[in-house]
Structures are given as C-alpha cells and as structure tokens.
Image (cartoon, rainbow, N blue to C red; front, side, top):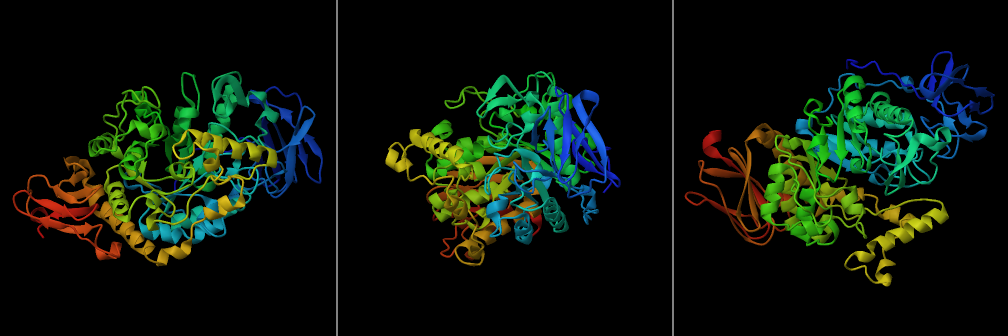
Length: 611
C-alpha cells in the first residue's frame, strides 16, 4: 500500500533505536518533567508552539512514565499510547512500528458498497476483548457486511463502559487488550476483506480520569457550554494546540492501527466559531496525510448537508453522515413510538418514501422537538447517508435496552430489514441484528461509587417524562447502569446463531445483502420509490423492484408493466421463516403482489434480463 502522506507522530512518547522522545503540549507551563518509573525525572526543554520535548537515551518500549507539570503531578501523558494499569496509572512507551502487518495488499474501503456492522468490544464476544472480536470476524464477513465499526475503545475508568466516557484518547482500553491486540484485529479483518471503522469522541471527555487540563488549562473553554460542561477549546485562546491534538489523534488511529474510517461522535456538540471548523481541518488532514484510503463520517442530528459537501463548495468535506430520520419513521410506523423526537414523525409511507428519496426528512421545516431543523441535501449522493433500524444509541438509550425485533412481530421485522438492506443509502447493522438477537443492549458504566450513584439517579430521572415511567416505582425497575448484571445481560448469545428462529433471520440478512451487492448497487442511479397504497412502498431500480408492505395484509400494486416479472426472493420464503405465508404475484394488466401479512418481495423483469 503506497504511502501518500508524510505524517509522523508529534505528541507523546516516540521510541527509536537509541531511546524515546517525549513531547508534550503545555504552552503555559514553565517546567515539565518526564518521570520515568525506576529511573530519573527528566526535565523537558521548552520548544516551539508551546511544546516541551526531550530525547532520553535508553528508554525502551514497555517503559512506564508519567509527567510532572510545574511541580504538580505526576500525571499520565495526555497522548499516552497505553495505560496498562488504568487511566489513573502510569503511561507506557509503545512502539507501533514493531508490529508486523500482513495487509500490504488491502485496497481500502469504497463508500459506494459500504455495509457497516457496529459492535461493542466488551459485549460482542464472551471474552469481551479485541481477540474475542477477532474470533468472530469470519461471521461478519460471511454475512456480507464490508466493515465492522467499533464503538469507542479509548481508555475509560473502570472495567466496563460504552466508551463515551473515554479520557485517554490515544490509548486502547486495557480491559480489551494491548495495542497489538487491536492491530491483530484490524489485520485479520483486512485478511477477510473487511474494513474497520472506529468511533472517536471529539466533543467531550469523561468526568473521571481526565488529565488534559494538567498539561494546559486551555484544552477546555468556558466560552461555550455542552451537555458535559465546558467545551473542548477549538476557537479560544491557545486553541491551535488543541486542534492539532485532535487532528493528530485522528491520524494516529489511521496510521498506527490501519483503521479505515472514523465515526466522529455527536459532531453537533462540537462548538467551533473559527473561520475554519475543526471538522474541515480533520477531513483535509486525513485526506493529505493518512497514507491510506480513509473515510470520515459524522454523527450529527442537525441534517446539515454542508458536512458532506466538498470543501471547494463550502462544505466540510466529510464522506458520510449518520441520518436517523429513517430510523425514527420506522420506529413510529412499526412500534408506535411517540415520545421525545418521535413526535415529529408520522410513520406514514409518504414520509418514509420522502426520507429515502432525500436521505433525511427535515430539510429546514419546523420541528416540535428541535425547532427549525435541517438543510436541503439536493445533489448529495444517497450513499453518503448512513441509515439503520437500530444502533447503540437507538437501542441502548431506551430504558430497557430493547431492540426493535423485541417489540414488533416477526413479519414486520422482516419487512423492515428488507427496506433497510435494499435502500440506496448506506446501511448499518447493530451487532446481533442479523439473527434478531434476544439480548438487550443496556446502558452500563463502572464509575467510582459516588459518581456511579449520580449516573444511576440521573438516568432514572431522565425517563420521568416518558410514558410508562412517570411513577417512581416504575423508574426504579430501569436497570442500574452501574450493576454488573446490566453489562452481562448485554452480551450477545452466540449459541443462538445456529438455532431457530434466529438462524432463519440470519439467512434472510445474508440473502438480502447478496441481492444488494449483486443487483442493487449496480443499478443505484436508477432508484425511484412509489407509495401505491397505505402501508406499502415499491422501490425500483430499473428492472429490479422491491414491493414492501410494512403493516397489515393486502395487495401492493406495481408500476405499469415493464414486461413479465419473476420473484427473486420474498421475506416469507421457507429458508427465512418457520411458518411461511408467501405472497402471490398477479401478472398482466394491473400487476400486484398480494400479501397475507407484512413482508417484502424482490422482483426482476424477465423481458429485460432475457430470462
């Protein structure tokens, strides 16, 4: 794989043949020392742009060290590559060049055929480690996904966490394994033809173990407030060093771990009034210096087309954006959700169709929940919108961690799966979705007791305004995030994969992804959608069609005949359902599919295929 960029790390402990260079950004500090365990405290020398640095001979990979700043500390390194004893312990010198990669021929990912599979390292496998994920990558590859997306792995306090309380942005969580364990995971994924995305958090740090301010008080600014307190400083005094820190973090994961893409968490909460937004900086620097193809994706609830418009058109130049409007429409349509932001969505097939045509529903019109929301995405290719039926947020932020397949009947679930996987947008699957896993995905933490109590109380208080949890006694039954049981219940049960009815659902996902790969993607430019009756949609890709009935029985009329049609697949075929109720195709004038219950039928024109 050719190296395009010339990037080399500039922060943290950087080993070479003679020793290790320590480099810290601490622009207001007078004295900075590297305190090497079992060795001396070495004064670092003040250098350019607020950095303190020094090469120390004889310090080898594996050495432990901390930093002392103006006599305070010692603290972990803000750019530590590993925290083997936890986020409050010493940092470890790591040599990324010592790992022998075998992915030289890996071509990287293409956005056009991307199918994401989101997973949480701690609950994906019984081991809850990078090695545990690696053991199951063959399952993901055979399913037909093209990339796994790891929820954040930056180290956090305690033994379990979703990852959004991370405080060591450069350090893989020690409870998941060592840095080279993550490299082996990525290497094996590439061998199997899978890319690896990583979720990174650049909008806040967790409340426990955050030592950035020990190096500089200007990592954060009171100029802006976020749901987590003072914002990270991307536009106030000394912000240049903070911006450089997070740009380096993005390049660190891509260059040192061969990560293929980054999902930037909650970019709507990244506040930056600079002439050039930090997101645009990250996108440009990754394009210039990644040294390998890498995709940058935003999670953002504002429906801002500028995020994915090219920089030369005034956009930020990101590759794709999470677009949750389709999820919200389908939850309302299938499960009847109506609290919070779901109140902005009708669940009608008309709104679902509009969302699929545009990428999202709200393009500037008023929202009861958000206020005016969205921009016009005209001209943005539909593959730049990442859509789902469920993800970690939309499952785990529910009071009981219930999945959509837990609350809707199997026929509706199968119809929704077909809609997702045959849509022109980029689909994301959440771990276990492919077999309709029985396990919930709960919110879980392992904070120290006093902070943990606040988290538990806050979570239950948050649901007081939701229907069904207004009474304190009902809220008390919401699983405690701090309880070990909440974490253990969230683990996938891999024994389900070979049993019914789970195996049938797995076969359906695989078959639909095969049709997507072999038929839909090469016809994507011909996409259109029609709402022929209430509860029914027809997705068309030229000679390929999918008739989908989301609710109830009845017929779905097909567009004017384009030749005789034959059925490629129905969600009621025996391989996918233990009690088939196969729809019937009536041909000729007024062609229609007659459904005995909700479902989907994929058809192809025989005249145009010569069949």
